[in-house]
Length: 280
Image (cartoon, rainbow, N blue to C red):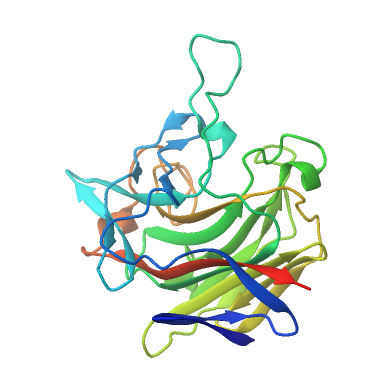
């Protein structure tokens, strides 16, 4: 890996053997989230989702973003940031026959390049953080090259029980056409200061995943040929029903037992998000 300096901020760690140019970034300077770059995911599959919120976002004035776990009257939620939106999330227009609501203008969409986050993990189980790329129309066409691929650069929902992180791709949507090579299991090794680098090199040849400067996985295809958006997300477990750390037959809309044991304050912390283009 090769370092890339950003004045006044921590270096990026970029794949060696290529030349890179910064295309987009957020260093989280100041004390207010830059909403020209980010929006909040509030809906899930066409309905408002109680575990997503536009609260709990803190910029500490030292160029760090904190996404906090919140609790009120036994209910939990956390923020889910994105630079675009999934078409299927938008509630349907009740006046028409079209199964989706009005398209939301994206803040940032991009194709190919190196996508990187520097972050510190949350401390409690029962909720998780992720850094990923998504297409607004994933699964909408038979060929994922033209409707996009979910690219999970870092997910930490197995951190506390198995001490691993996950990365990998999903395509074909989330029904019977859903496909995946299976996610790479990356052993988690804490650093002295708690900061970690995660990234993916998305090119015409495939996807190469990195964790703390080490290559941890590679996928040759299918390769999305369309622009996609970035998500820096957190999610409380149990509200979707079974899955993550919520056991089988867990009821929808109810926090899981592990989440109820979380000690607040707890938050996922981000130093920067950067996108680089490869240059000839």
